[in-house]
Image 1 (cartoon, rainbow, N blue to C red):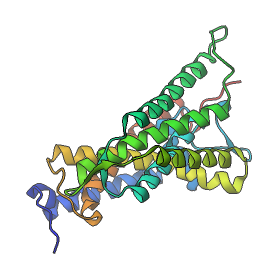
Image 2 (cartoon, one colour):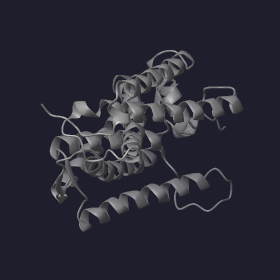
Image 3 (cartoon, rainbow, N blue to C red):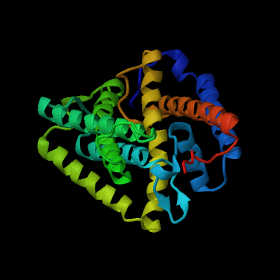
Image 4 (spheres, one colour):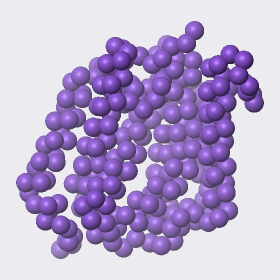
Length: 272
């Protein structure tokens, strides 16, 4: 039988019960105090991490999506990257080669440049490189999401698994090219404007926020408890990931509360 040698405070039943109960109560409280419906909950997730400016967002018919164009691209790209790497490179924890690093760096640079250019557009008379467009926000956001996944996935494997594989998770230019092609197809689906496509993508983008935060906080949880590299199967990660999800919910609840307290509305920012 597979066992994991963890500190007693992590495996003892009282700690498990406390963590799971606290996470459940936090989540229930948030669900009861946020807008109704699946898209309403997705809006509340996006509300905590995104400005949700109306002019910089895509719409499902007349309804604004939970995240702006840039954030939608980033979280959808990250989700795509994590799924792709999980299927391609199980438990690989090696970082990309120098050539792939350069390409990923270019994606990050494009995200930063487009973000600064877009920010300057809010100030009349400010210099701009080009006219900001939502399709560019989506494209550069997706590239940033791919870069996040390319580093987060191997970092997670290095932190969690006892038997992690030292080979690069994103091991070849061909693998990166396929991932970028899939990302381009994902962006084309977003730009299609079809409600049948945008509705699930809206939910998936909001789920991406929770997934990324849960992974990041779950890793932090293990590092603080000095329980890294002790796991051999996914089922053993339940408590650690529950703790990560709980910390993610605390962040979302806190930011939702502060923003709602200041604005008094769940809507994004509106600019005429």
